[in-house]
Length: 288
Ligand code: NAP
Image (cartoon, rainbow, N blue to C red):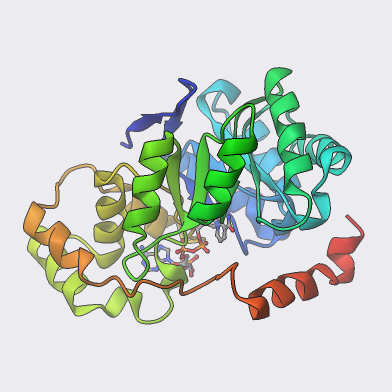
């Protein structure tokens, strides 16, 4: 079973968890129940995923005590700013049906995220959330936030997989005492990730799958992972990474797969910023 990482504030967080991006509300309760039953204890959702209510039902009905689970959600762009984030937090908590959160994250480095950060600091001080952090903050944004924060982020949740390894970004997080967490560890299975010859060869050597090699490569570097799957057998496969260790030569071979640029999201590209704001014009989201 998975290990835990100690966040800078001393809170323990599972190093492997379960992501629910793109799992429709109608399926999500059963999927999360299956994930918890398979052994996951960290569940990663977001207000923008529109499945917090289903996650909450699963958390309340799964039979595992609340304090053994680690629940993350995130504030999206339209929830930035001090007051908006305060309201968004209560809305998320209400949808989840919980009375505290384990981790609350700023989803994107857009909008008035400094106002949001001050709200998060207050929520943390009030004991409503056990840890606070950010997502998708590139090193410059992360460092700037650290210079201006009273409480530094505990986590930066970033796109990270063998094609985009971010060694320098992770080194900076180490210097700042911020825990890295990898989203889309499989790059959503796109761009031939599972067919990479190096991953296939390493997988064959250890009698594992490319997915397991990717997850193991992350956790061996102290990076938290939150793979998503709606299939029970893959949930179990993704958890079965604790009975082997990649040797240094194989870690080095995987390092060579780095393409040095994002496959999924580049928050510095103007086209991406436009795409994100276009997504916000989705009427379902704006009615949140
Ligand atoms: P991912 O975990 O990299 O990949 C998920 C895809 O891989 C799904 O299509 C899944 O298919 C497939 N898959 C899972 N396990 C597999 C296996 N063992 N073998 C073959 N295929 C497998 O992508 P993600 O869901 O985008 O990222 C993970 C989590 O990170 C999200 O769910 C979300 O919680 C978080 N996230 C955060 C951000 C952010 O901005 N902060 C952005 C994106 C994601 P099936 O479901 O059909 O099995």
